[in-house]
Image 1 (spheres, rainbow, N blue to C red):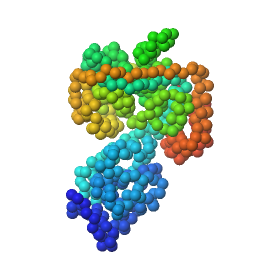
Image 2: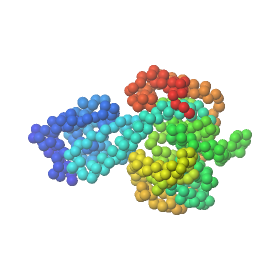
Image 3: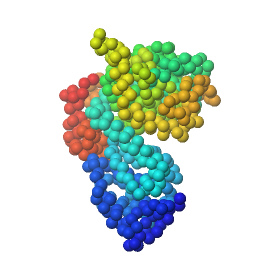
Image 4: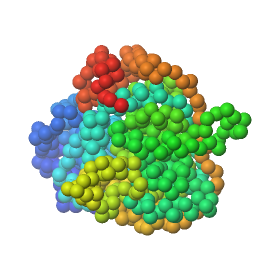
Length: 504
């Protein structure tokens, strides 16, 4: 149905879609004002997403009532793109279906990580545009839920992330970078399906070269079957994450990127690790060559640039599975094959075996709590874990336009049916990614931590982006971007190290 503009009784235009009026037929301005007065916007909300407001009579009232909030308008149709009567120019950004990017990309681009968002629905549009409106509503709600989950994680781990970042930079011995290749990449998560596909991975490596990028939690299962990944990935900020990395720090492998002359006199090194700067890494991982991942925050970027540490910038997506896919897309232009990214358990199996946290069950087993009982309880927790569904929904969107490049190894994936399942990998190119180590000078760790703290404080005081840095660090320390001044941030960050607020 093609919308039409018709005059209201007081003269302002209203919009008609079929037999459905989008605005009042008598006084659209008064209707919009009453609508805005009835809104209950959370005080900590920074972004207001208005879903198909028609001509947008409500936008100026929202702007006046909530002057400190960004207004994003989402349209269900392109009709209003060139309608002069629309109030879209009062919004900060407007999205139309036939724009250059899809809706989720638009939201990720326009809404900074850690920002609270609120969806405002213009109900007459829901009736007029039906399923079209509902599809957009689903995407926005999925985005808001995912960001809310990320914010909750940040509020719980923020202080630890700051401390992890400083300590990881101080310990870093072998920063890594790469030149992208074109060969197939196999991405492994630690889901139960990995056990079924390990024979297929092993067979693939006998037939030709492939780059294996493994979630750190899947590394023990791969090493058990004598499969050494090209790169593992760790993003978790919790102390338990280091148990997944114990075997990696013991397995050595000389990089093919080194010539024999360069390799002479050098220690043989473990296979490399791609790690978020704020991940938890214990001291035994310091020798592992590391591809540093920055989350794009100003404070992380400033430190990395000042230290001249190579890094790759990726958004925080809340799950290591998404980060591995991002890395795979950067490492190769060839096809990507996934396995172990189940987003679900299988009966009582929550992970492929062996698993770095198996000892957790062993320690708790007794005659009142046998192993099967503990595993069943864990499976129930995973089955009701909302984040799994949130991230599965995100992957459904992410994979939807990449079906010619991303495949599933083994049987059809129950959550991602759009991806083709294969049992053999095909090669169109044999050029592997090249990894390069840029060794750093070793020194006293405490002195290096102190130097990094001083550098961070200096940037917080003198950088042109110091206000953005203040908000980022305030949010990590308190969960509120406006809670702390620069001097209070400096004191709290110093206390993290001098008073041992966070152990590890």
